[in-house]
Amino acid sequence: MSQLALVLTTRSGPGVLHEVSGVIAAHQGDITTFTIVDHGEAQTRLLLEVSVPDGESLLAALEAAGSVKAIERVATFQHVFGKRVIIMGGGAQVGQVAIGAIAEADRHNIRGEKISVDTIPLVGEQPLAEAVRAVSRLPRARVLVLAGSLMGGEIEKAVREVRAQGLTVISLNMAGSVPDASDLVVTDPVQAGVMAVMAIADTARFRIDRLSKRVF
Amino acid sequence: MSQLALVLTTRSGPGVLHEVSGVIAAHQGDITTFTIVDHGEAQTRLLLEVSVPDGESLLAALEAAGSVKAIERVATFQHVFGKRVIIMGGGAQVGQVAIGAIAEADRHNIRGEKISVDTIPLVGEQPLAEAVRAVSRLPRARVLVLAGSLMGGEIEKAVREVRAQGLTVISLNMAGSVPDASDLVVTDPVQAGVMAVMAIADTARFRIDRLSKRVF
Image (cartoon, rainbow over all chains, first blue to last red; front, side, top):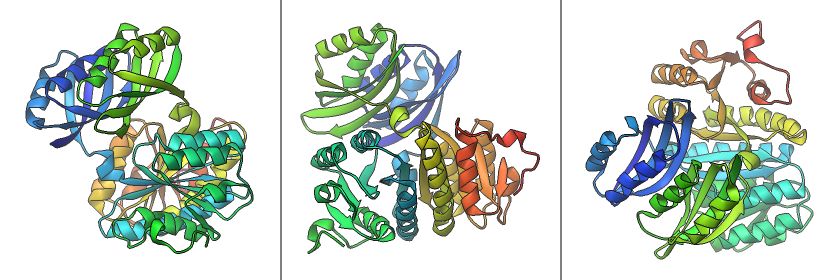
């Protein structure tokens, strides 16, 4: 199987993806990601990531497709940005967790890992619960850190849902019910960031499920 | 036009996107984003973001499609995570820029903006140049901050390319040719992060192209 990441310049208008996906399906290819990079009146640039048995013959067929004007091969997001740590909550604490996670990701990326650290400061139960649920749909997201002083209610429900879908959740030691619902509870925000990276780095020997305590 | 974000549970295998995109094209819909959320032997969960004139009739047609088993309406990534500031470079400096950007994004998000701050610590000219180029393909990325002590060569070329594609680039005041190639040069990393957020926040009165100097 080849993993291809392609930027296609196509005509604009509905049906372009349908034509392109038809060509890919005819080559037994699986589209894993698709986004519109630029959308103009006359032409559109699409980013496609495809897993396909014969990459060269797929490229030739795409070049021949009526709606495709140009094709550029690019690096996949998995290759460039790798696994993602997601940090959300109050700005002061998100910043401190980020400091720990970025410094630790640096140490692993130097040794061949690829880990990025993505954050959003948010206020309020509903926006946070919505963002927690959205992490389960984010490509390459592997661990979520909740960085705040009080989180519960709908956020706790959302944490239980995304954990059931396979996401690891780390919580700061805070008021509310979110710490009880999380895989790991860490008091120091810098350490929470460091542990989040260690939990997903193949270059680290650290597994949350092997720890003898759950609260630090 | 309705903007729909849908998680479709479908059968697994090639051709599913082709069927789904056919239904969407028949409803004059435009797919703006597509990703595979989960990929099992028997079933797959797809995330689709679609812009379509008649959302309800598209939903009915998708429910009737042979490969679709279930449909869930979710929030769009634009709604949940908004515009993105991207910070890359050395861990120590990326962390300090992130502190500034996250604290400033918090202040704007409280007033109704949606800005997230995404980072990756990286070492070396080629990985950094590749990551700079990839930012122009990242959904919702609006401003890039280069946080390091020495960047030039291929990274400078990549900066000029992504600026030509419309991305704003802020550089720390550092050795190498990247500061010369950037929209704005800032010496204090915390301020670089703050200015990056101000540059894209609709809640801020700050435009880089109206500043009377380029280096701070």
